[in-house]
Length: 248
Image (cartoon, rainbow, N blue to C red):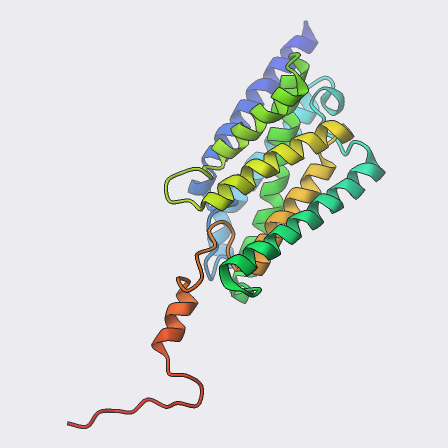
């Protein structure tokens, strides 16, 4: 009886994690929202730090409350050697797709403004951890524990993750929608294969950081010629030219 109550409490906490993910944008912690210059300043981090604390705190609570989280929910490293190796391999695949995305949009690697690094990179990593613990850990784990077919469970949590990140919302980049769904599917498969979320977390974090570093965008790389720096270039004189003032 006690174990049943603890399982149900952990399930309720999983629901809170999903709701927290849906509300990430209000806290300034949405993984796919664009970083802006100045997000590294301490005063810009209050909401984001609160979101991190709530997310990690709920994950820790599930670990303590659920009677067997490492087995039933796969909230563990899993196969340490194989998981880390697989995670790095998935991350490298994510880096390759990020480079392809940068070439498609810009025909080059477009580095972000240095002022964005402190705000964007930690956000990509921490959000990836909370997402993996929530969707590939708790959500997928509860589906498998309930007897759902593994392939169907992986598909269901991937769609739940994609919806929770709002990647399919109007105005969002379609490629990012596909990438989000792909991360959910591949990370779900990796979690089942390694019995832990380490591989999924490593691959997810590397992919998201790579997209930011090579495109300068976290979630919406714009088509070539439409980025703000392209507009600025068109407004300035070519190298070696100097503006000529008109005389009345």
